[in-house]
Image 1 (cartoon, helix red, strand yellow):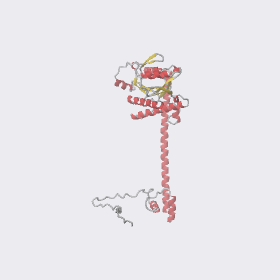
Image 2 (cartoon, one colour):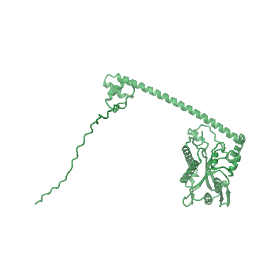
Image 3 (cartoon, rainbow, N blue to C red):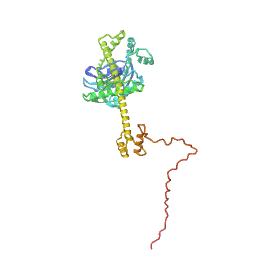
Image 4 (cartoon, helix red, strand yellow):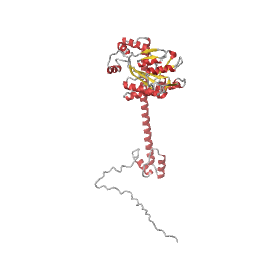
Amino acid sequence: MIHPASRLEVVIHSRADGRNAVKSAAYCARASYRDDRVGMRFRAGRTGGLLSHELINWKGDAEALWNRAEQVETRSNARVIRELRPSLPAELPLAEQIRLVRGFGLWLRDEYGVAVQADIHAPRFLDRVEERLHQTGKLDMPREKYLEALYDPDLTNRNFHAHILMTTREVCPIHGNFGAKTRILDDRKAGPHEIMRLRQEWEKRTNAALKRVGSNAKVDLRSYKTMTREGDAPEGLIAQDHLGPRRAARSRRLQAQGEDTSRAGKRRQAVRAFNEFTWQSWMVLRALEREKSRREAEAIARDREAARKKEADAERHRLQSSQSAEDAGEVLGNATQFDSLKTGSELAQAISWALQAKNELPSEPPDEFSSPVDLETYEAPPGPPQPRPVLEVKVRRVRGQRSR
C-alpha cells in the first residue's frame, strides 16, 4: 500500500492568475506583510498552525525577499514564485520534519541558486470548535500538550505538510541581488525531467528520514501508471481527486455528523474501497507466485543434485572397471565429478576416490597440529641454515714508490 504522505504538489504563482508573491508568503508564514508594488497589506498573523518558518539563501526577512522578487519582474504575466507542497509523514517527530524540510531547501539552493522560504503547517483538528480556535490562533493549550494532540489520530487528521516557496530567479547569497531566470524548470523539454528529479530527491530524503526514526514505511511519488509499468502496483488503480480546503472541510463536517453523503464523498469512498481490494488481491497473488517459484526452484535443485550423484556413481563405476592405467587416465580426463587433490598422484587419488563410498573428496590434508603436544619435552625443529657472514672490507693505505 502507498503511504498517505506520498504527495508533492508543484504550483506556479503567476500574475496572470491573480497571484501575489507577498500575499502567498504572508499566508505561509502566518504573518502580516505589505506589498510595496500594489500598496496593500496582507494580514495572516492571527492565523494559527505554524510549526516552523525559515529562510534559506537570504539575509533579510521574508517581506523584503518577496517585495524584491515582485519589483524585479516587470511583465503583467510574470511568474514570481514556484511553490512545492509536500506532505510530511506523521511518523516523523517535529524535529525530524524541520530537518527534512531544511535539508531539501538547502538542496534547492545548491541546485538552482534560488532563495527559499520553508514553512511547516500543522494538521487540522477533527473537532470543529477546536479547529476554529486553532485557525484563529486562539487555541489555549501548552506547547507540549499541543504537539501531543497534533500526533493523536483521534484529535487531528495528522496531515502535516510544508509550503516551500522558491524564487523563479537566481539570488546572490552575498549581496541579495536577483539574477537570471531558472529557465530549466520552465522549459518544455527539460522542465518535466527537472520536476521529476526534484520529486525523486524529496522521496529519497523522506524515506531516509523515516529510516532514521526506525520506521519501515516508505513514500512513493510515482504515478499509478508508472508503478504498474515497473511491476510495483496492480493494474486498474484509480487516482483520487484532490479535494482542496473547502471540499475537505465539507467532507469533515459531514463525517462528523455520521457519513459523507455528498456525491464527491460517495465517489471517494467507492474509489478507496476499489483500490484497497485491488491492492490486497494483487498482494495475495504475488505471495502465491513467490511460493510457487520457491517450490519450483527447490524441485529443480533436487533434480540437479540427483543427476549429479547419478553421474558420480557412473564415473566411479567406470574407474573401478578400468583394466589399465591408460583406460583409467582416459576415464579421468572425461570425468566431471572428480576434483584432484593438492598432493599425490592424480590417477592414484582418483582410483582411491572411486573405491570410496563417498561422492566427494577432502579438499585439504589432515590437520598436522591435531595431536597433543607436551610443552615440557617439546623441542622446536631446526631452523633454516644461517647465511654465511659477510666479509668486511678493510682499506689499507700503501705508500707508493717514487719513479726515478
